[in-house]
Image (cartoon, rainbow, N blue to C red):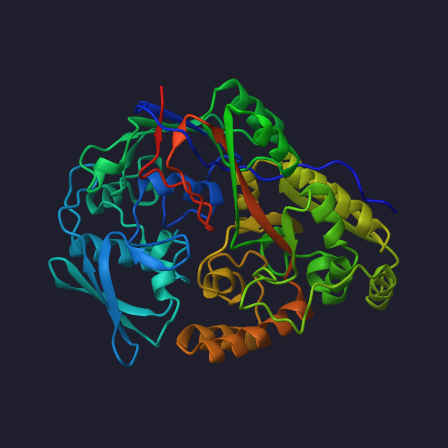
Length: 502
């Protein structure tokens, strides 16, 4: 069967031009974020909003090195069991409360203990955190954890205002208060998120907008039309098939960057009402499903060659990629044989996916490919935040989802594959995998970590709780009036230093 059809993919935004400051910035998002609480959220687009609203302890630079943010410096003890962080002074939360060691201790403890928190596995190595100075905190670890600084760069390290968080509890996401450059104003689900400049921001001199509005627009064609008409200034992912259109328009700018993450198909093994299904109960069927997929064809057709076909949680270009398990070519005969070995002639499969054109097109290709191996696939399109809720609650048999990736390999696997991982939606449990990932996390020796992750990949490709398709590049379209934007591999839209001419 020929799977060459038309394509579209990815949107975000980058910049050029100079000129005077403009008061407002409008950013089109591919999806509507989930809850705006760093302790509870899990969506990629949510992290884009956090980049403007919630500073973390640590940031990254263009080379994916960790650099100071709310923490000015940090150091592990010689035995690796303590991490001391010195904190930035003169920082205010958006409600006027002071940022200090007490606030960091409060946030980390909230992340580790709140019932609804998804950050517990991020901080699983932490025994306790203590204030060791007005602007110093010390983490005491259960065992060495090479990934901890990477976790504190992400949502686990986004510090929230203690008084506001304590007052709101699990409803904090409705009125979030952080220490970032823009403060929350309002949210209309499926319509807009509005932030306004926080004049008390510690680095306010680098912020050049009075208001930022995020507009969820799942359809890539509609996002591009809004960019071309000037209704938005910057876009979270343009379709790869639209890249030439953007490049040819003198009123627009274009940039791209290779991502850190992955595209995956999640199988429900033991989570809630959706767990009792053949795909979740039989790894031979999951192996067959993976072998039915032509990843190169999907890259060519859907992503116009702007993706990296892959079969592991990190791209084939990563130093962590296990080259002894390369991306498998499509093998329809072996896939059919595995279906038969599992005891089936044909298997009914329902796959949920986000309702954007790029994902839909890829899933339609996979639907046709899998049919030749014996899978009768029904596709269910849903709004992105609903998809994540369904995955979390177990209201799915199979689900297609993305992960934006993390600088440290632990951030791409620990939460997903350890038995109690906060993002382990399949509810996969393998004691050997738990052991390997805990040992990889505890070592600071890159060679030891690499060996552990390679061993883990062997289990992953045998059990296939998540079947990976590859890694996207992030393609940015933007008005040429914008100046100062520099895309980074994590694809967060950082607004420090960005301005817009009149």
